Image (cartoon, rainbow, N blue to C red; front, side, top):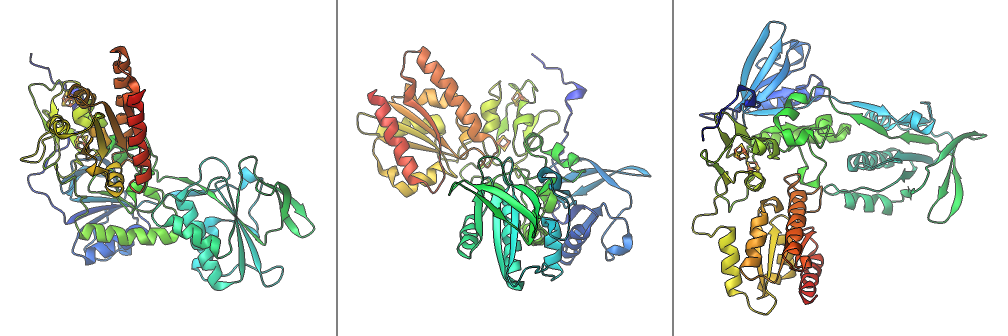
Length: 529
Ligand code: SF4
Ligand code: SF4
């Protein structure tokens, strides 16, 4: 049957370039960070176009800065993006290799949340940072030592980047004055590279952390000034402190002009108001889509010092080509069988990396595809295929070969995400267990319900699916999809009269071999049941 192709499905036409041009860079943002990045990139030999600046004289000759021009849409992929621009003179298209979002965001101090007002002794974290960058120390109203109280995420989730800013501020304060820092928070969330170490170090150097699980502190004017009254949940007493300086955390609003870039990564827009998902897998300036970088507020980093680090990271990334190596054992992006494709666009919508496009047919861009396999499993027509490395079997073949060699009465098959569970297994040394057939997959999202049923059909007594912890998945929701698919197959097993506990889904971190061993032992025990 010939499927009619409607005009309306050309939602995100993404031309694949004949040749990729990695020298032209579009920088979005008119403030100092964007200009500094532009100058640095120019010195590195890039051709730079900055959108958002007002004054041509602010940048050196050779950097294009068209006035009153905004980005309306982005099509294409790394090395061959087509940026549709709008200016008072109409529309135009620029072809660039990379796009860097460097727009300023907005910090809203949470004074009113705590019933506070800005004063000499009450300021926002941004104000303190600006003061410290200018080399000024806080006033010392009561002797040599300054008691500085930081409020950091007292309601809702705390933010690792906010902690990083607080640790930076404490470090700078220590250099210029005698300071006793106190940090009041709900959760100490330090899930970012190096932050756990900095948290320990900050504590060892004398910073006091107070964690609330109920209502936070209240503030009253006392004889010595603003007094903070709180219940210490650890010792169980009501306490009072009169801070010399009270530093209030902030609510961060993303830059207003991120929409065209979020539109180019359909998966991201649903999960984050910023360009970078909140995950330790996306440290630095990477986003989900190859070739689109985010620095500073565009990625949720509002720390002045951190923004300078981001500029360095962006320069290095563009110098080294920035494209993350996809999983090396999958040689190519998936292929689409046009005879099976019904143009439903499921793959375009679901690809976490914005690597799928649709012109006359669905097609994955090889440089942008991270080989997560999500599109291949989710395509309702089974039209998408990921080829294994030449000479290697595909997943069903590996299951069959592994089970044929496995020994013991309890034959196990474990589908393991290469980034987490497979590394945990390597540390545990369980690859040498002769009743376990490990199938290492680029992402848990690659695991198809058919693969699970194939394992049982080929003689597995129990099957384990292990992906990254939710929020750590490099393909955003690969691990979530794997969990949902496992639940569906468990229902199917129950209907077929098979103990559903023979199929277990779990999440693991690469540095938790003990958890992996426990998961395997529990799975074996389930067979006994
Ligand atoms: S999900 Fe499958 S059927 Fe739908 S557009 Fe993509 S390839 Fe075609
Ligand atoms: S394998 Fe993953 S990254 Fe590649 S096109 Fe499919 S969904 Fe996108």
